[in-house]
Structure formats: structure tokens, C-alpha cells
Length: 326
Image (cartoon, rainbow, N blue to C red; front, top):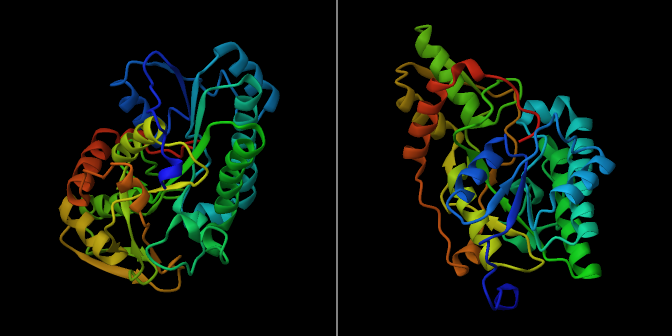
């Protein structure tokens, strides 16, 4: 790890920083965090830039001249979305990351940070999962399309680093949640889906609401504002080929998570489980030792994070819609 740390921190002061995917949950949180840095934040709306168009991406970057790029743009979703839209998850993400990373090399930017995902690790990887587990076994089938695309992005960063000496780095968080999440049940991840189900059950005076699977899988959840802070910390203090894990070091069963959300929402009914639906990986906990060595730890606990996320949901109920690019 010592060889991967910068001898001198990378300064963001005065830099032009492009956050690709600034309207998504991760991108918007990153923009909020960057507002506390003395840098110029660059963004591009979808009407201005189609990230799946290689020529358009290169032209825009040549004109905007960013010094730093944070690749937070991606097509994202939960188990159901992955199962029904595999081509979207593979093609969109491959196109977005390839176009941005190659253009960053072509124009000679100073630093690029690519955002991966904890689903890059094998389904049966030893827990907690270290960065060394990458490509050591079969992926989880329920999200392999997304995982393959994210692995390709990590490998692209490593390849441009090795062949061209580019300061391209990558990192992967565990399951994210927080303000700006997608609360559309057709494409949402587990926390927003459970918030919607618990809220609707409470509003309709239902006696219960249903969860997919057994409720037994264990998951680690990271608040998106913690992630944004970690990304800025990495940009300043890390340069190396290893894709860094970003997590909390704590895990909870899906059943307990659902109960925690019911408590936050104020739903007093029962939880039921549809065991015919897939559970996904039995456990997903990241080994975040490298991040701790770099001097970063998460600060938002799950209870407080769920409460603030539910408050955000209540304030934005009219915005329940799928966001294809996070």
C-alpha cells in the first residue's frame, strides 16, 4: 500500500473538475462535496452531451478542458432491472466508461477517478472482500452484466496507467443509499424499494408488506455523502493501480434492514417474505483496510442515514421516476 500513496497530496485548488453523471445520486453528492473545495466544478446535461457517443465526448472534453474527471455516470438498478435489461447494463456502461477514459487520455487530463461497484467481486468471495479477490471466481448471476462492465472500467484505468502513465484510479463502494436515490420500484435498489413499500403500506393501512427473498442475506450500506467525501479524499491522497474498497465495515441482514426502515417510516404491521424471488449474494462485506490506511472512515451510521433518506423521500415524492444514468 505504501507504494500506492502519493509522496505529495494531489491539490484540487484551482482545478477544473468534471463530474460525469452529476444529476444522479452519486454525482450530485460529489458536486455538493466539491463545493467545499477551492475548485471549478464542470457539468454537462444529457441535452448537451450524450455520453455513449465517443466523438461527442471527445469534442466536449476538448472544449471544456477539465483537469480532473470523476466518472460517476452509469446505468444502474436492482436485481429486477438487471434481470430484464442486461443489454442496457452492459452496453451503456461499457460505452460511457470507454468514451470518457479514452478521451481523458487523448486530452491529457491530470487525474481521473472511475467509480466501480462491490458487485465486481466473485459471488463466493471470502468475507470481508479484499481488493485482491477481483477475478478470482464466478460473479453473482443477478448482476453480472453490470459487474462485467464495471470490471472493464477498472481494467481500462489500469491499462492506461500501465501503457501511457496516466494517473487514472478507481474505487468501489458497497451498497449505496441516500438523497437523490431512485425510488421507482421497477429499477430501484433495496433501501429505496423498502422505503416505498413501507411508506405505501403505512399510507394504505396495510397489515404487511412483502420482501423479495428470504431476508437472510447480509449487506453493508454506505451513505452517498460518505462516499462523496471518500472520493475527494482518494483524489487528494491516492495514486495506484489497486481499485480501493469504500465501506463502513458493518453489515445487516435484509430482514433486519426492512424492520429498521419500517421503524423509521412508522409502519407497525408485519413483514412477509417471498422465498421464490432471488436473494442475490449471501453476503457482501468489503475489506476497507486500505482506505483506513489512507486516513478515511465513514461517519454516517445506518440509523441516521435511513432517517434522513426517508425525510428526503417525503420532500420529493413527486419525483419518483427512474434515472437511467446515475
